[in-house]
Length: 246
Ligand code: PEP
Image (cartoon, rainbow, N blue to C red; front, side, top):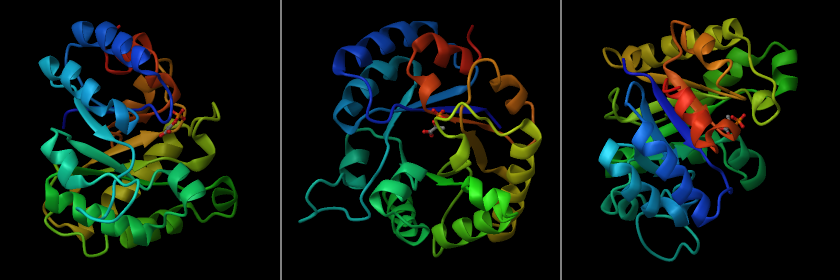
């Protein structure tokens, strides 16, 4: 299974930052690992076209569960696909926290994306209070079953799950490799049961303060197939290091 690193730029970077990043990143990127980038939607096409020569795939940080129509402000998966978009991040904890997304609403998005040929990168993760209360695995279990409810036709290429403990996102606090591995192994088990024959081959990414100095240890864990990265994906040099290109 090829390791996959996804850059989530969130609402950062002006257009010139994107151009400079791609000019620095693309020529040095050796494709040892896969690199996908989710810039602000307005910069999607720029990143897509500049990444194309090295197959650096572009996607979005959020997507509509509808294809067309009167949904002001939304991004259609059909339009994204037609523009050469590869993937959508779905259910990031910031979307759950600030925009009222739930695992149930994510199921609609996951379903629509898969139908339209967009890879769904579905995010799950517990809060610190939930971890402290010993509820981590049951929270992850619920998020997986609800977010993947009625989601069919999946294969290891069109569904990626990202485990992002909320307490580790943008905080500088990383789950230890052992903590992350425990949850990843659990996710693998749930996916294998839900999708016999294919679930065990799906990529499960870790996200939460991944940096060049902790990435290798995290990636050495058996069930960690890559990373979803915020802060450390903003500098080309750091993202290159995360992709195994020092
Ligand atoms: C994220 O936003 O998905 C993330 C993991 O952020 P950071 O790497 O900054 O913790």
